[in-house]
Image (cartoon, rainbow, N blue to C red; front, top):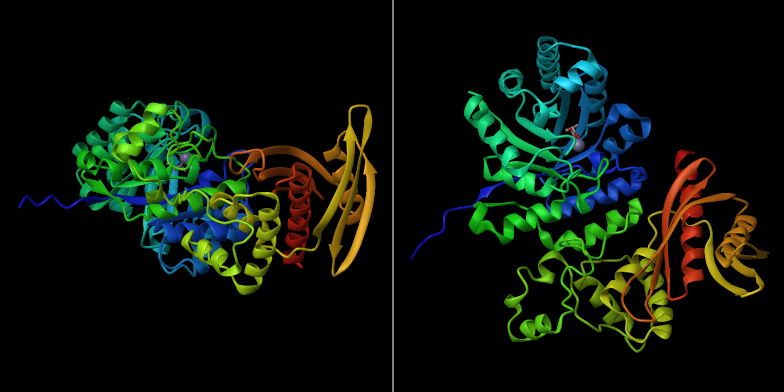
Length: 511
Ligand code: KIV
Ligand code: ZN
């Protein structure tokens, strides 16, 4: 019998909470970051970069919180080559079961001259000194020569050799501005392997940005040439055009392990759920055609394709939707389904609720099932996400009535509840949503400024659930929140009210 060679392991370093959060408008609060960290742990990510502790009190506290709770993944904090950055990272990581400090310093001519006004030798010494300093505080040290792909190769070899001698256990080669081409980047990794004498003492890592849409291709080219850690984010979110997407790298390695001879320890069945969570907390919708986790990634529209699929799925399918957590069982539940069936279905989607959460979610499911004949898995996920709040709900939505039309000034009557008491208000506005938000402002006495609004349907059909995402500024805080309903205005009201509740919960947490 021919035995296939064992696959080499590629470590997955997730930076959704650090580089991902650097995406304009993607900021998350500490609780949301912890939820994502738990989801990453369920995915079996090897290293979670939880933040940049020195940058703000909020970042410090979230890295600390993640370090306190995550046990199965290494928790990493970012630091510049500055002692106070390294001190902050070490302190935030004190209670981590497994900790890593990631220090970085730019090595390209452009950065050294314009950002630092320093020579190669000065940069070399700063890097070595700070890796040594970090190593005194933590055994697991990663060093990144920022803008490595535009750095002089000889200088890169020299600095990499020195930081490994100084104690770096991982050397990360960032394509910081997404400038490299796959063949070129693969060659860079091969050259580093061949020209850095002590390279076998460290893991080579890759970190690619998507400015030219090549981040995943570059990461894979690097792996083909010997890199054994890939830095990436869920849904590919990140600075500017984003980082390489974890789900794409992992599924490429898995689907084409015959080609790469590598695999990861990731449990891909968690991808869909984690992707939804990141999208919900950042407010960044996942494009329907996004590879692996987009709603259309496994849908076949053309007649010829559907015919082929019916004859044999492998005609047009290289991965199965269930492999990445899509269940797509078609019709699942309806208005006659009981609580037991509802709970069973949630469990098979990997969702376990506390009894009180289950009550709320089931009550909401019944209301949705009354309006919508067929309740799909995607609807269930949206219902649960909408109903099971991670924060205290100061105000809950009761109902609304609206009048609007051509030549009618929109008028909305909103009823909310707080501490078992009902409050109502009727307002007019430039449109029904404006009137509705004015009524919520008047009841809650929280003046919000709507910065962004988007709506997406959860499933197809005229009776589909609509999911509204809002970005609202309330009391100088910018929050992102969602609401779902078969009625667009109701979904809009719920999303706005969730934003108000988030701000109240954040203020309570600080007390
Ligand atoms: O893109 C980059 O160079 C970075 C470094 C901090 C690794 O994010
Ligand atoms: Zn980056």
